[in-house]
Image (cartoon, rainbow, N blue to C red; front, top):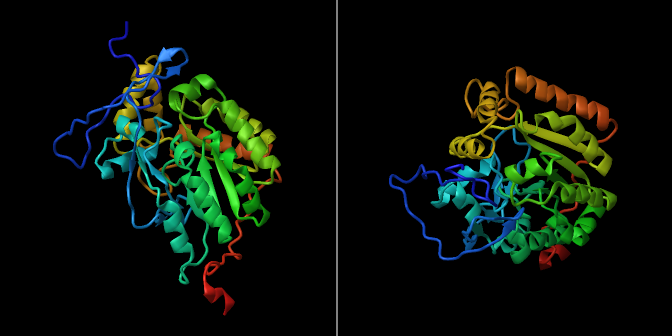
Length: 357
């Protein structure tokens, strides 16, 4: 019997120390939940939703290799539990762990629609695409309860402002009515993350996300309704999903996706320890192989923070992955491309009397 069995229904298997605290702080769980995952008892610690009160909601992105200028996040932390998620480290700024706390303590910004509207009404604001989910998924389970993402989409529609979405949750289809209205003026594009065609792989990598079948259906329905979809094959993890690049590309292209994008996994900050602990518990037979191959993509380290190489990697394995993605684009996306979002229709004074002058 395994003396350290994996925690069912969660991605991270431990809470790493918060690098901003000299002493660790024990946190008490006062609520329990029981949910069945594939017939097994899941982690019993209930997710807690904690309201926070930021002064602003839209952030300027300074990283030159991210591909976005502005992002906004309605939630901090994410119940999806993706083990590789780069956003885990940001939870430490709020006083929590990047491990299980990231999945159990979800910070909720109920004032996000109001803050967004205040920004879009400013005379000084120049329309640029704003990406929802630059850090954590705007359609994670909390959205079903709070509907903050939907209300923000309604604000974007009201002010004719371009917006992009990154998600791996089929809950986005709930808002198809608003998305279709935005699409009429080329004000929306959606990036759906699909990392594997295998449910077994999805279940251990991303335990509380929508199934692969549901995500493919989401790509198809969005595309059929005129909403441009890019699929994120991200991250590519050597010896876990790297062999799926071509079949993934073929499948999502047939579902209606107009393009694909990818990154090679990098385990920055606390994620290196979290991922290492996870893979030794969930895939002990290939843990060392996977870790060594990730290191070979980043100069012998699990992480690389250099702009330009950190998400594409280097070395022979990284080259093979990047070449496969290039081949996939040539083979399955010839003649397809994502349209540029429309920034010409933004109306900052839509609610004010100044619009009449």
